[in-house]
Image 1: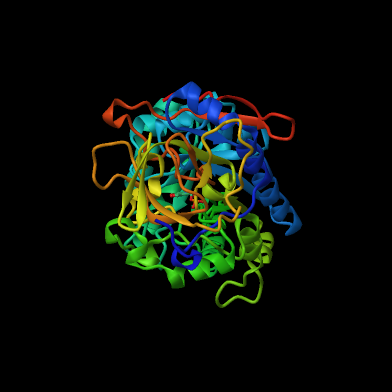
Image 2 (image 1 turned 135 degrees about the horizontal axis):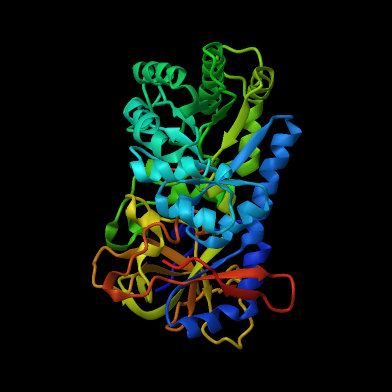
Length: 465
Ligand SMILES: Cc1ncc(COP(=O)(O)O)c(C=O)c1O
């Protein structure tokens, strides 16, 4: 039931002292006992650090910019609170997200409302609170100029969302003809609309297409100004990548894995994996974007923005949540299979949303021994008899409900009562798909306010679903 290390490709997570301190503290076993089920812990100081790094990058480039946290990436109240305290805004895409952000301290004018075909009630709420609205279609603009304008009694602040030419099948944003219509209506709308600029959100993580489109939107701002509109800002959406593992491990994983390494011979397309390593994560990707020279231009994007007097808006989700949380499950049982083990935990793959997108959340989970009084054994401690490959299934009746199809090469045998801690799950993984399937409780979120003392200090997050 063991195998040579090279048989089991690994995706070791990058070191993170704050997560390490929580793992070593013994707190997680106490919380698992208290909650009697899976839970997540949040490290909001990481959010603050990621936000500060992005703001520093903008300042160093001399670019006027504003960061909105894309709330869809995590429902916890603490991140909206930290955004408000740190001088950031929040990107919301539903009435519930808008209410949550306002209720946790973010001012209306520091919100941007995104998403397609927003209903009139949500638009009206947004206008009343001075929220910037990324308009997705001429029809939505008509609603703002017509019925909503009469109810809200203040100008609607709008961006016009552009359909990326490189992604012509996107269901979001406006094509050239729709943009022309929308611009004409903004120009005719008088005081009911304040047209502040343009926006886009691109799939993928490439820098150059973002720089190219940002430069194009800057030109559109200049054209709109010539028609008497304000047009002094552009939003480049989200898509700043993060790095979960180091370059060598990721390369080795991509080259070394095949169906034998997955429970039931499962296979995934390599192209469907998130790029778990990138050389320029988070704020470094932002620096690269600002330094990039858009196609056909003589200057870097930063200079183009500055000379046009255009403010750069960003809507990062995942990148603000890098290292800001992890998900904890208790091992409920272990079965032997042919050459590997099958672990069952007390939660479901709904708490690891990557499993629901024809893909797999690959960073290796930490195995924390069941005896709370035993010293913490780091996962890297070599065991001459190991590794011990095991896949991880949910405590549900669905055959396909797997937290990890991959046979993870654990450094020691997993046992009932051990904890499995999936690292770096705050960005989208932990809560975007959670439900009360099987009448199970939605896993609570614990905010770890401090990790530097003898003991981490914790409290429950204030968001209740
Ligand atoms: C309009 C918009 N902005 C921002 C984001 C956040 O993207 P990310 O988490 O990759 O930064 C998304 C993600 O879907 C989005 O649709």
